[in-house]
Image 1 (spheres, rainbow, N blue to C red):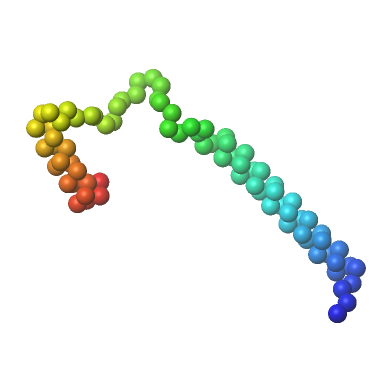
Image 2 (cartoon, rainbow, N blue to C red):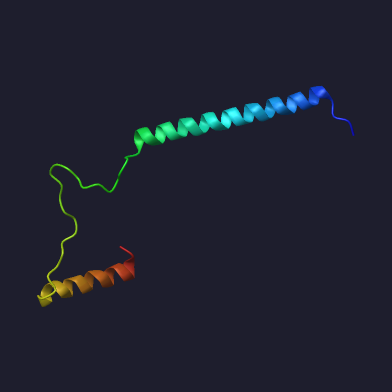
Length: 79
């Protein structure tokens, strides 16, 4: 089976175009990700931040019962 020079050049041109488009797409996606996604999403917030989780004092029985009830609700409902 002979492969003509023209067919070989078409294959190489397609491969070059495919690689170029792939690298260009990767560059655009990386640029957009750097622009829109935060660098460190878990950093400590600034300004008037509100603490969401309240650490309970386990020495008081009422706080501990509320914690257990909330944990049971989490296991039952998945919330």
